[in-house]
Amino acid sequence: MLTTQRKQLILDRLRQDGHLVAKALSEELAISEDTIRRDLRELAAEGQLQRVHGGALPASHAVGSLQVREHLATDDKRALGKAGAALVQPGQVVILDGGTTSLQVVQHLPLHLRATVVTHSPAVAVALAAHTQIEVLMLGGRLFRHSMVNVGASVVEAALQLRADLYLMGVTGVHADAGLTTGDFEEAAVKRTLHARAAETVVLATIDKLGAASPFGIAALNELTALVVPAATPAAMRKQLQASGVRLIKAE
Image (cartoon, rainbow, N blue to C red):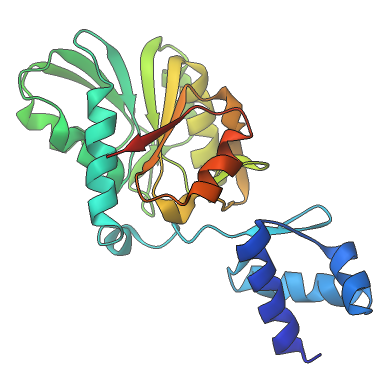
């Protein structure tokens, strides 16, 4: 089997099964495990998969620039934003992550809502300006331009002083085994801290993030209060995620 054929087989197996074990595939194809591992390294370098101990997981494709992500799955993001906004209750302290789905949450919040929103996203803070009854607290730090959020020690230190009712978290990967992941080390640290300071954490995830993994871990799926997914999420994927113990909500 040619290298290109092996690589395509690897990607097909990942799409079909959601994971791949290098030793099992090497035995099936009667080739060395080192050959499979080389293929995995090369595919990982191309962003086609996420390597893990002993094999690989599908890579998240939700890692493009913010300008690109703004135009992806717009209908699903609107539905997720509406579902996320419906979870916010008057008087609550809510942490709102960065990203295009979080901006949809803001657009669906009632203008008369009285609440406190904490965010490390300048874009989310600006979008909340018209909500005059919402107190906006901004966590400042180094601007991570890829996601347009503030990261670093100052954000973590400020977050440690919070006691929030709800955290609406954004991630790039949601996998039954790998859990919640994202593509930047510092951003993952901020998300872990915000998650620890909230009584409830809910993730709003588009279909492209489901069954995928990124390099840096945040939390296990069963640590979430709920995972909100688009109504069009395939039944097999919903079943796989629910097997991890997470409560699933469909955004209609």
